[in-house]
Length: 561
Image (cartoon, rainbow, N blue to C red; front, side):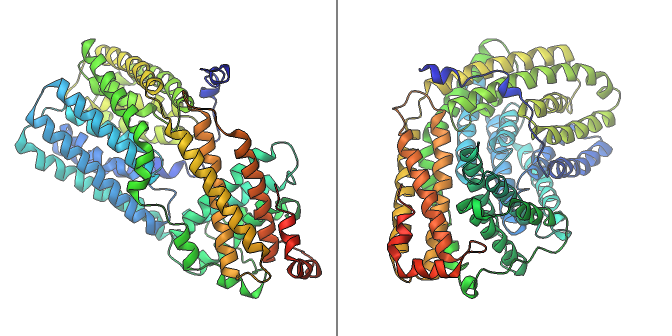
């Protein structure tokens, strides 16, 4: 372990608060609206003990808020199916055996599968954590085989309601997610353009801009094609221009366009740079950016899945050895830690411990209020669910301050319990899960991180070489030039993300940092040359453009590393 690796494990940095998400209130309100009706109905019927099953379906409302509504409908349906499927397996196992050793093993395997699938599909927050919490807790819920269908039916009904809640905002703002993604790309490009490509922080700003632009294209290509999407595509093209030619772009104009995308006003209309621009956004480009098959995306995640399975099982068994009655808390704590690399996993471990311990103190303050009446218990859970989603974007530990007391209160839906014992067991499970889980992350090496970086490097270098060859042609086809530019931009964004993930991983061979830097520099130069060749740069001198077409060697001269 190098000294550089040691410096990547801070304490204070992991707890630093960030800016809240632009849409923090959407998941916060959605989860409240999704939880409230089923819980209040059960309260009126005197069956609050069944609320755990309806909450499984209601929690699905947390997902998909950054996705266009056409894609969100599919994603939410799959989330509901995954949530209910995991719950069904857990309840079936709980009805067949009460052997804690077996149940912990099943929970660890399920946690690993949920982690791998969520990462491979890039589901987004809260990713696998909520799925694992529900399935792991259900493994230890008293259950008979005859009760399973009814409990699954409750979860499915609540999941259908959560699907409706997640889709409802589309009635008022049908293009909201695409507009936000485009605005983020414009703002990120403006930040990079403000550096003129030479100022301090240019590398970080360039990487952030490339990632935001790539995310915007993914959002737009997942939306239904219409006039609004076409206008947004032209704005993302302007963000790409700023990324490729920052000195020729106006940051103020980019930010003004981003501001106009807020609300429900008309999408700013940007005239295409030339008449043939309408040809450039076609089916070929959309096909080029489609993700690889799921099985190919799962293969590189085998080390992360192994970490999750081993860490969760060891954490659960350690909790059992200490006599804790709810080993799934330690299991879920371990499952929540695993991020893209060991360094990020350390940060999450610090955040989880601090947030849970503070949350235990918050539970001590809330428990007397919640015990006044079952309605007070439901209202406390609703308030905490809102607070968790409102604060999670600032930092994970801050959101955990609300999640922890909510999880403790949920255990009291069936019957009131001793607050002191709950607090002690939760604090102990948190420490055990974090310690054992992080130990598993260190012990289970991820040497595939280097292989993924090599693959991303090769892809980026080939994309650059292909673009350079195309630029050397006297008259490249406009669509071929556009597809090549988009493929190169996507390859550079993926290279930076893969390099960042590999840089925080331990116990692997030295990373080719110089080769990565060279690939990024030459790739962005080629990207700039491609943008200029397409005539996208505002105010470009037409005579200069004709000169480059007469001398294709000049186009390649500017893109040498």
